[in-house]
Amino acid sequence: MIYFEENDMDKIQIENPIEETQQGWSLVFYCWVIATIATVGSLFFSEVMGLKPCLLCWYQRIFMYPLVVILMVGMFPLDKNVVRYALPIAVIGWLFAVYHYLLYSGYIPKGLQPCDKEASCTDIDLELLGFITIPMLSIISYSAIILLLMTFRRRVKAVSQYIN
Amino acid sequence: MNRQAQVVIAGGLILIVFAVALIFYKSKKADELSDVANKNASLLVRDYSPTIGSNHAKVTIVEFFDPACETCKAFYPLIKEIMLKNPEKIRLVVRYLPLHHGSDLVVKMLEAARLQGKFWEALHVIYDTQGSWASHHNPQPEKLWRLLRVRGLSLHQVKKDMLRDDIAQRIQQDVEDARALGVTKTPGFFVNGKPLVQFGYKQLQELVDLEIRSHY
Image 1: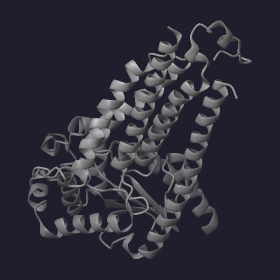
Image 2 (image 1 turned 180 degrees about the vertical axis):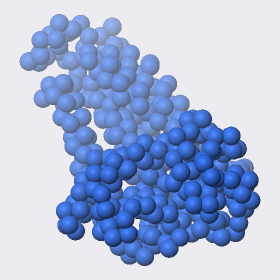
Image 3 (image 1 turned 60 degrees about the horizontal axis):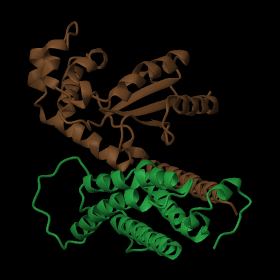
């Protein structure tokens, strides 16, 4: 269970076994990678390709961007409580993403609204390979982050039960 | 591999992919814009478009502008400077692209002032007072009736002429030409038909210099 790495910092914290399980850390790391790709990708869509983010896109960005920072903080050193503060943010973002997707694909009818210059949440601006849309990418990213965080929490619980 | 290294490598990879995609996308876009401009070269200048500078000039700058646009205002003295530095070599043609809510009225005022031969004088005053009538992207053209003081310009006549059909048609034509040429933001520049792809004052200056060098 406990083994040493070349890193001195890890040696000091051997009382926390999860710290030593590279796999557990990797789960949070993968979450961070997904959040970072989502952040950079959304900036590519808006800043490089010039696609205007609609209101719902903004709400999803509001909950995705801080994950990059928060997960990073939870990774160095690994905080086994990272799920407590990262998961609520991810779940709220996921809810916006699902709502957006349902609106987008027409499952929720959008009330008739007068046109204005703002970007509409139901306009489909981009379809990669003919079926991948931006709200779909958002759902996939949020879902993956949530699943990984929940797996991490389960593993932390298992390890602490094993120790006690 | 230690953890810090993993994060640095993953972050680095993401940024590299971003940068490569950016360069790839920009160059593709630039090609597309040049293509569109080439195909629609005849739409660049209309016979009614306001023009300043020598008729014999071999370099023509076409600018799509919005009188309420702050960047257009900022470019105005810069273009003047470029033209003064290269006397008789540059001609400026301006086209209307009123994107701000309400600036179509200001464009109509400009066209009406042109009927009295006071287009450039009026444009100068409109840019000069932009902060007073169009602050915070909220154009209030009615304020211009107090501000638009140009010697020899009858505002009474401007008010009447603004309603003319031919003026509305010209503005409509300019907006359509802008769309066909792929201009979605103001100011939109073309130098001898070449679009300014990478926006910026230095880039515009370089494009103009390039055209001057190849024509003089």
